[in-house]
Image (cartoon, rainbow, N blue to C red):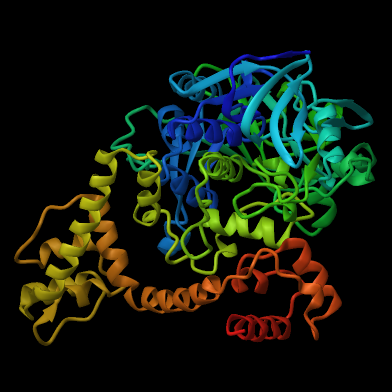
Length: 624
């Protein structure tokens, strides 16, 4: 055994998406940081879909960006196709998505890590958390080296006792071709954390030269490509198309005939799978009435002919995967370059965490990513960022940084995990947020950049640009309220062409813009005092005016929500002694230890009557 001479403020274990954000943000806050991972070549690896963003997920990415994280910038640097989803729906559920060049994404993120001056990066398999008293003080690797750190962030992904399953075949692995972290899982159990199992699966990769792309439906990106980072002015790289295929009766027959080959169907894979990203065999078994399922054929990068078969997640043996894929139009002669597989792994029940992502049992030990029961790169990165920030704040003796549900999807994500827990891989959706009209992709900078700037993660220049943008939005809104459109023949003819009613009297432009048929760009033909503003400002003005009434009501709801969040509960509160409280509520409240009445009200099994009783007691105690 040997101690490494250099001591660190923060040690991050794991080089996936959570570990990258945790280590970068810790180092950027000027904390001496160590990132240690089992394979330096696989930092920021995308073992599943090579894409960032999508519904619910892009909200997290934009929030990460507004707080000073790297994910959005990295995908803008390395993306090969960009699209805005849900454009026919309201702004609350519109979201950008970018297909990544898998190799370039990994290389670019590693470069960002290497260039961070307060960050050391090492390769090693961590086997033990070193505990002194009830505090984490370091880690020990497989080779016997001990690293001392004031705070530890575990971002281990699927590596804790990872087990890959393909048909009847199974073998230990954290990911295909990488060692699992078996002893680290045992170390966590030894220090008293409750651990359970989850499972998920990946689809195969196929050789593009064996695909008949001409028979598939081509899906192109948007022009111009929508960036994910607020700091990206324009994406100039050439976009690459994706393709759409479909399963059919022949595909379903192969799958139904071989269901016993899949560990996800037979139960050989332990733990629950992701509900919203099921394997192809689970889809066919659960929805026998569906005649076909969409399969997306997505490029792995610019300099490879491999394609990712999105939608064909599976635990079948390679032979069955090939047989089923070849039944689809355009894939009749395909060759598999990498088979898909199922993987089961340990995770820590997230109700054992504080809202700062520090464990309740062990001080200075933070968890982020799939170790907390989530799925998805974006969910992992969001937790990594928050864990990295809070680890630094903790060792500096400052209050933790906690985002509430009304100001960020990150707040929704962490509150759901810590307060409600999960028994299956958790995925973010816009439907999980009560205030999604306020928590839009486009305004994440307005909501959160002030925090990133406060922590030194957002530059003065970027923060001032954000402030200027929203000052321009406010100025333009005021101008449109004062500027009048006159009921001339020209104006009314233009309104008729847009499919909306003519005006009969002088009308503020702000009122005309509120009409569903009218866009900000249409005002150019009506506005006598036209102003040239950026597309970002125009979008902000349009959303603010069109949804003004809804936003006002939602802000009132948030005000009521905040009053509950501001009613704090002492951390040492003994619920067991509270007469009239149901036994189930006592157990859950003592276990989760909510910090506020608002959080207590969201605990499963805690009823409104329990909350009323708690409110009465806290009010009485305040005046004792």
